[in-house]
Amino acid sequence: MTLQLGDTVPDFTQQSQLGPINLYDYAGDSWVVLFSHPADYTPVCTTELGMVSKLMPEFEKRNVKVLALSVDSAESHTGWIADINETQGCSVEYPILADGDKRVSDLYGMIHPNALNNLTVRSVFVIDPAKKLRLQITYPASTGRNFDEILRVIDSLQLTDHHSVATPVNWVDGQDCVVVPSISTDDARARFPKGVTEIKPYLRMTPQPDK
Ligand code: BEZ
Image 1 (cartoon, rainbow, N blue to C red):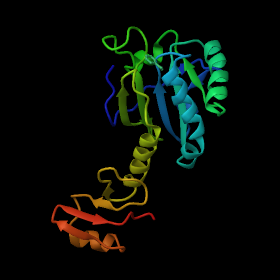
Image 2: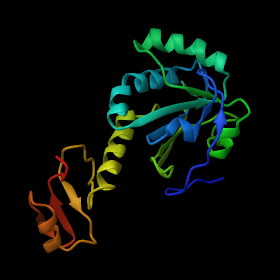
Image 3: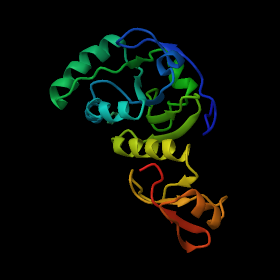
Image 4: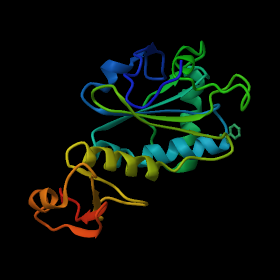
């Protein structure tokens, strides 16, 4: 199955080191970052899962729950988490799915056999509270992810869902935004009282409306 942006993501129930997890129940009214890694007890993954644990306050601030996945067992996850906590100075408390039967990996297309034999690649899925897929990124096994970038995209999605703006290159929360093309400059000036700068008729900037 190939998931595309805007699709309703498939539900599943799978084991984790914290017991069975049903995606839709786990998500509730929150956003979800679902991310896979190739294997437990591997170095890049150890740093990634540690960083996600340290970023939990940032995820919580944005109403985001996190859910990791590999094809290793729940017992393996539990042993490895002790190593992650020891080496990364953190406390991993979020669930890591134990997808030994590859049910979730197959549903979400996380196994790319020409890249990695029978193991999940580094996939990231951002799912909104309506269970729609909003972001999908696939990284190679040799490249650890940048979870600040995932948070940045969530900031952009949460902003642009509620305001008629888009976010320009390398935008981070608090910076000026682009007025969406469907709004005339006159309408934009009425809608954005902090001001609209027309650089070109199609390129109008405004301060971030919710700041
Ligand atoms: C790692 O997480 O360190 C890793 C996993 C699979 C292949 C290469 C690196």
